[in-house]
Every structure is written in C-alpha cells, then in structure tokens.
Image: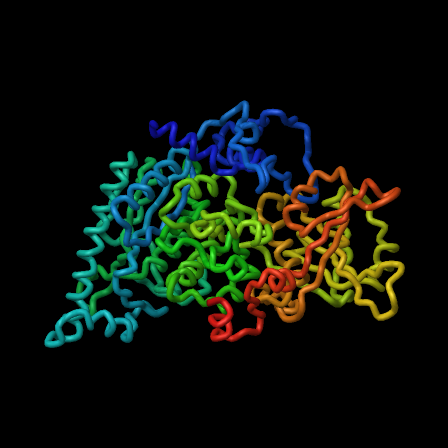
Length: 586
C-alpha cells in the first residue's frame, strides 16, 4: 500500500463526523480566499441542524461501518496555509516505535499541520531547575552532580554531568532525525540551545506551576524560519545561562523539557512574533509517550477520553493513584495546562502513546476524543483499544452546581434556553415551578451551558416517598457545539446524580463533591428529536409514554453505584483512602 493510500485509510478511520470534517476543511482553507463550507454528500447547506446538541454521527457503538458518506465533501479547499503543533516526544522508543511516530507526524504535515518537536527521555536525569531570579537551585544541582566522581569539585561535577547528558541528548536527536527523514519529513535538528535562562520579570505571563524562566534567544529565529518553510525543527531541552562567575562566558545548560514547551508556547502566541503571511500560534499540543493518556477511575484505569481542565484538574490530581504505571502523566498534564493557558480557546492538547498515528489524525480533524467522554464507561470497557486511547485536554470552562435558587441568574438562564431552543420561555410560570421543585442547576462558564434538575413525584406517590431526579432542561449555546462543552456538561450532571458517591465524581464544582448516594435520573424527549440516539447511548434505557403521549420518549439513567453492586464490581467511594482503593480494586 502506498503512503498516499495509507493516509487516505487513516483519515477514513478517524471517526470524523460530517460536522467535524466541515470545521476542519474550513479551518485549513486559504485565508485570503476562503471557500464556502463544503456541503457533505446527502446534506443541504441550508440545514441549520439541531440547536441543543451536536448532530450525532450516523454510526453508533453497535454498528460502525466504514462508510465514506459522512466523511466526503464535494469541495476540498487548498491547504497552502499551514498551522502549527508543538510536540513533546518523550522516549525511550524502539526503532520500530519511532518509525510509527514519524509516519504519524508526516501524515499530519500532509494534512496541513506543521510540527515543532521537543525531545524528552524518561532515562535522562532531571536537570537542575532555576528560580524566578534565574539562579540555579542548589538542591537540584547537587542531585545532578552525584552522577560524577566525588573527588572533583562541586562545579566540576555539575559540568561533567551536564556534558554527559548533552552528549546523550545529541545522539538521541540524530536518531530521531534519521527516523523522520526516512518517513519523508524534512527535519531540522537544533543541536544548540534555542532559549536562554532569564528572570520571571522578563516573562509575558505567569504559569500555574513554578518553572524555569526561559526567554527567547536569537537562535529561536532559525526555528521560526524552518517552520515557515514547512520544515520540522527538532529541539533539545537546553538553554544558555550565565556562567558561575560574573566574568565567565554564557554556558549551555540542560533544562526541563516541560519548561521549554511552555516557553515556546508563550513566545509563539506572542502577536509581535507573527506576521501577516504566517501565524506562529500553535493550534495543537501533542505529548507522545509510552504511557499514553491519563488513567481514569471511571474507566478502570483506562485513559480519560477528554479532560476539562477548568473543572477537573484538581480532582484528577488529588485522586491519582497510578504513580507506578504512569509516573509522568500528572507532570505532562500540568505542562499541557500551562501551555493551553497561552493558546486560543479552540486549541487542544493530546496525550497519546506511540501505537496509533490514526489517533493524531482523528484529533486534527475532529478536535475531539475518539469516543465521546460522556458515554457510560460500561459501553466502552470491552473494547481492546481503550487502554491505548489518547486523552484530549481542553482548557474548558468552569462548572458550578447551584442548589440555592437565589444564586441562579435567571436572566442569563433565560437567554441560554431561548438561544438554544429557539423558543420563548414563559419566565413567570417557569420560575414559579422552580421555586417549589428545583433540585439544582449546573452552570458552565458564563451560563454558556445549563442543566436544570428538579425533584418530581408521581401522582400516586405515598407521603414520604423520595422524589425522582428529573432533567428538566439541558442546553448549550450553539456556538459551543463541537467544543466538548456538551460532554463536559453531561459529565457534571452524571457526577451530581447517577454517578454520585463514586471516586471519579470527586469534582470541586460547588456541588456535593462526589459525596453521597447515587440517584436515578429521568428525562423525556420528543420521539422525533434528532438527538435521541445521543440520549440512548448515555441512558440505561427508554420507554414510549402510553396513550396520548406516544410522541414522547422517557429515558432514564440508573444509579451507577447500584449497577456496580449488581455486577459484583468493586465500589470505591469518593471519601476512600489510598489503602482502600488498592484493597477494593486489586
């Protein structure tokens, strides 16, 4: 099979929907004369689509034919304008693994995404760090100096250790450059430092994590020139620093690859460095490791499919237990978090293994996870490829759960509901009903998405019967469709109702924080609603309402803790200690 045929096959297997493919083609169109969005086969350009949720794919988990009907368009725009991705390549990798990675990066470049690569290696010792004033931190320097004979002076030991580490880095640089060249890329190895150690006062913004203050060097101009020429610069985590004495010349020191990634992202998003002909702003952040994505409690240790940093980062970090099998996942997630803080809101990070270049292509086209993260984990647990699924990371939007009606801004709720449903809301009647039956409201961002849950009773309920949790409204502003906001909102709903009480529901969003007992959730939808297939895959079941309500379907989600008990699975509550987690899951 030729390389072109392999690329076509990878694209067709990327699970891209019609909506995602149109967005990709529009994004990578020529800026000067951008064509109209392509019209997919069998669709009308005047069809506005649903306003509540993204249009579901024609395929489902049960049947997923590799049909091109949803993936082909009549008009393919020119890809003369390229976009950038920053790639952290964290070895060690075998020659075969490097060949697979190189093929994936070349495929991305063919599809219009030029990559700048930063090398890292699990077996390289951690380099010394530098404080906000640009001075070396002695504790880390002593750790590095221990790699050399003790009869040398401290400065000599540090110098010899760094020289040896640089030698290892350069040899890995040429090895990876050879693999990229064999795959058809035009790599440009940078065997020298492209940044220098500065001070925090020189930085444009402050990151979440304490990092070495790296600032641009004149050598970075060569990297930008290579990118503009369509080449692939490959950089080492090195920087120029002042000598140990005031009169000593600058020396090349090893730095943390994560710090270099953050520094490059900060500088490449600086408008002063961009030109009208070429925008240096990266749109993707790729972290390719042997570990892959960030493990998830909900998926039995398989990776998170998508992470909303704004609402999930702290809970993931506080409940993380995979330090032995995925020792660098949290560190990489923190790096992606810092990088995305500088990148545009449409950007995303991908943490992926070396095993599947197809996942990189899928994220380029869809900017979403291979499978929707709001799908119940039980539907995906049996799929063998789940252990190697990438984790897509978005800056996302903050999520708040409001149990007090007085804290809800009904003006904004009304605007979001009317914008999403394209119908007028009877504000007075609706507020009167919520005053007596409201359970809670989930607010995403600045009321960009809302989920309203009420407490309801059946007409023949006996006194004292516990109310049912009823999903009264679920709405996301149309402009956020395709951004992952729908999945994030549904995930927050799951954490507060049917997933409540489990370890993976431990999100700091102002709600119950994962504590409590899971409850069943019900909602209804018109039988003609185009999103019913989306609801079906996320529910435990549905029933057609009887008699004159045949045009309505009633969906429900059973409490997940009860489902786990019936299946005999271990249940790890949100308040469990680490010893409890190991006891229940091993």
